[in-house]
Amino acid sequence: MFFLGQSTSHVTAESTLDSAIDIKTVTEKKVNALQRFWNGINWDQIIATIIEKALYLIFLILLFVILNKIGKSIIDRTYGNYSKKQALSESRLKTLHTLIVNAFQYTLFFFFIYSLLTVLGVPVGSLLAGAGIAGVAIGLGAQGFMNDIITGFFIILEQQMDVGDYIRLTTLGIEGTVTAVGLRTTQMKALDGTVHFIPNRNITTISNLSRSNMQVLIDVRIMPDEGYDQIATIIDQVNQELKEKYSDVIQTGPTIFGMVDLGNGNFAIRTTMYVLNGNQASIREVFIAQYVKKLSAANFTIPNTPITLK
Image 1 (cartoon, rainbow, N blue to C red):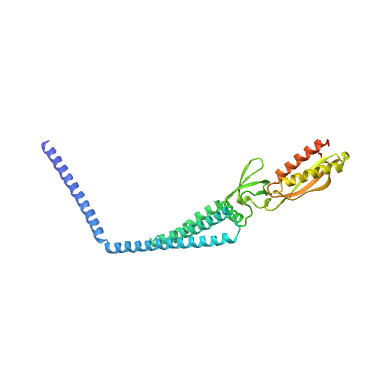
Image 2 (image 1 turned 180 degrees about the vertical axis):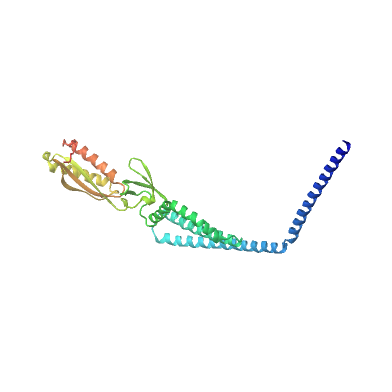
């Protein structure tokens, strides 16, 4: 029993010693490999490469900073001269100026990143080839967005409408006052107060009712057998009174066109005039109210039966 225990202890000790020797050997090999790697590094070449890349980057940054300042200066000067020659609103000029500056800076930034990656040794060609597939997918998704931007740019550039204009979008069946014109959307406020946000790509036909004097037609229904001449005289008196009161709005007229047949035995006296754009509804309301007041005071009948079309 004694010899067996002694033999077992001796074997265990030898195994432990062998394990320690193996660990020491492996550790020495790793240290030697690390030393050989460290000693094999060409530090002079690395430092020279870092200095070279740093000088390239400094030159690149200075170059693009100078190009950015020169480009913005040229754009500012060009639009300064353009604003003096063209009668454009301040908001339109600011929008166009901001658009051109942003496009210039985005383009400059793209070339800066491309040059930066090239200096750092990044394979830009391979990255662009890989990004091309993703770019196609993104481009298809952003097609509508780009259509909005392009359409909005030409709407602003061609002065198709301004803030405050009363317009009608025939294809959409919407009309109202323009409250904002942007590169992506146009905002309109209808007569009932509804605010419409319209993507510019959906705008195909713009009927601008605020670029010239607008015609106003006012029909006053009458009973001809009560005396056409007397009724026409009262309407003419009202026209002359209101013409003086609203001389700053009324550009031409008002003129009595004459009697018109509305159908189904309904007759009216029509008055025509031209007013400044945007004042059609208010002027029509004022004239109709005064017509009804004066004719009623003179005991003339204002028919109120509905007109039926057959």
